[in-house]
Image (cartoon, rainbow over all chains, first blue to last red; front, side, top):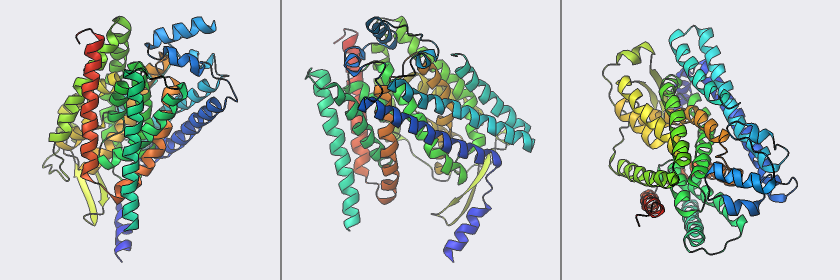
Length: 149
Length: 323
């Protein structure tokens, strides 16, 4: 009886379409991103695919700030590392550590997809005020991601 | 009884794991004991696994422990630690938000409104944080010292701030009315649906801008600051405040993470074990929180936080040549 009352009351709670879209996309991107991170970690640890930066090199340089760290890695490995964009990841994507970084990109891109879904849901509902707010959040997030392409 | 013993046994094992890892890490960082390079990654996994288990039990977020503790006890550049901390906070939020949204606990409308100012401020914070380290030869020490001071401030907030389960909001302010910042969720403790509304939205948005800046600059999720803003300033019920805070973190850490990612400030060997450890640990922690919430774990965590703050200030002052 109590359980039925609880279920009935929970059903009264109206979760709008935008919240449902946000929840579903967050679920998908978190699982997809974590899978990439774990695959990258396994490949890194097992050595099936060699990492871009060998572990032994890490130990000597990780105390330095990123710009110095990558400069030293670049000198040691005789490669170009294009910092300031995501290119430094894609340039070396055939390495296990960079494959793992795809997981982080999935988190970032997935949040944008989620916000686009939210905007569409509010547009369909003609909820103009919150739609404008959603578009501002989308613009800020897009600015951050597109700036470094 | 056996179940209860198991719960407390797990808490004791997690605490032991935390202390063992930190003692060995401190031996490597401060006393230059030669440790195998694999130790650092493996230990990060166990450290964040233990933090993930204990943080929900202690009622604190994982990032607020991770960044200060790792920057104090590990030999990594603080920028790499902040980068890993941001991704960790983002993953934690992405994983927990769906169930909060479906239960009506997280308010998408409040979350979006907060994210407009907090997101832009987080980008600015991330840029300033990276610029300070780049522009000043001793920039990382300034950041480390500032992190220690911030941690002392967070410690004071956590020790002194009160939480209000169901704040009474008599009238919504203009902004809250315009955006219809209301909601409802089922509260099992009361056995009924709780309807809520919020107020003082303008003041709260100002506070969110400050919180977003700090979150971006130091690589923290900043749930410790979002929750009081939502609960004490806006008058959202505490469960709504904690859940909506996670939604804000999910939305605002993304732009900041882009800044760190493009600048090469996210190092896979540090970030992956930290994120994966926290991912699995927090699952166990969520289960454990339902079973037990001993106050002693909170006090131990607060003590660790205080110690990490002192160590961060010490390392900052030492690096700047004052000690």
